[in-house]
Image 1: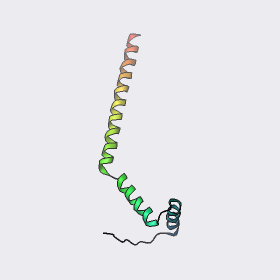
Image 2: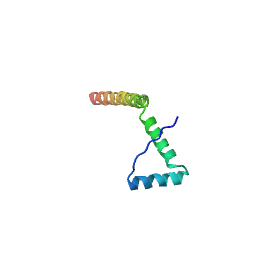
Image 3: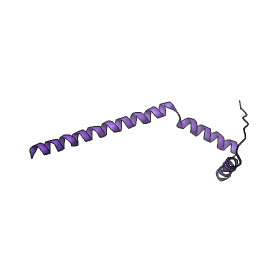
Image 4: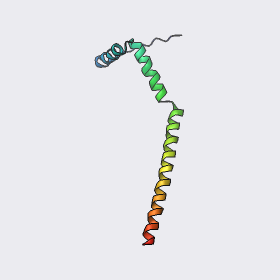
Length: 80
């Protein structure tokens, strides 16, 4: 089932889409469809959660390394 959507674009955006369509050898509707899919994929909440979880893990590892360095430097200062 197809849905037809109509909207007006500013001239510069219209030209931009035409240029992309020409370069990619696709229709403007295919370009818009791909942009919508890319936007949807990039805004997937589970993907964002995974990115945040990965970042948290990186920061925990960095915190461990910094704690180790701090303890090492404390011991060196106390030894002097």
